Length: 111
Length: 114
Image 1 (cartoon, rainbow over the protein chains, first blue to last red):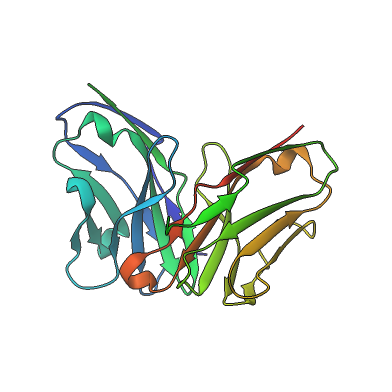
Image 2 (image 1 turned 60 degrees about the horizontal axis):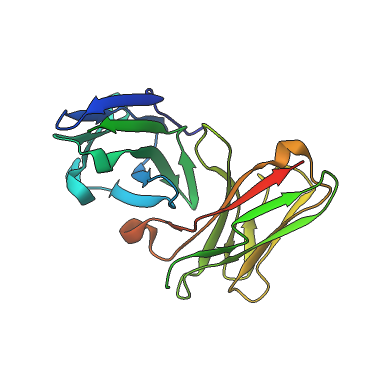
């Protein structure tokens, strides 16, 4: 069955540190992958998505993610985090009107 | 506001009562989805509609859960005979072109069963 796993439950960083959040999926077919962010008290918002083409995708607020097919991974990265990036981040897998989410990673950025 | 609206934002109910939540999607979106999110977990898919047709409901959590979208616009999610384990955030999302825009989520309805 298709699923998404996120390895880090809670990540704590200082401002200006680099970020990488892991996401792995299990599915043998064509993949459609997303990262969503949920800021405290707000709704889920789309950060970036991958459907096809360039495996390095850029999203809003300086985030990017790389699809590595051989590793079944879609890790989220940001070279220098800010305090305002404190939020929960969800990786999601989409196939045929079925969007499945990982358990999320809570990111805390210390000022 | 052109986002997805959910009402109410919070609902506290006694065990055994019925509750109904409403979702108003973005008007031009033909697809509407319901999810449940519990603490420390990602959203869990419940059901989805394309226009007024409910195309997937096998993952509704039990027969106490039902959803409608009578005119292909707003949708309601009803939970009958609520249990404490139903306490969660219930999220609604809508979409048109998922490849371009993904899903747009509402702020959710937080249900507390006491």
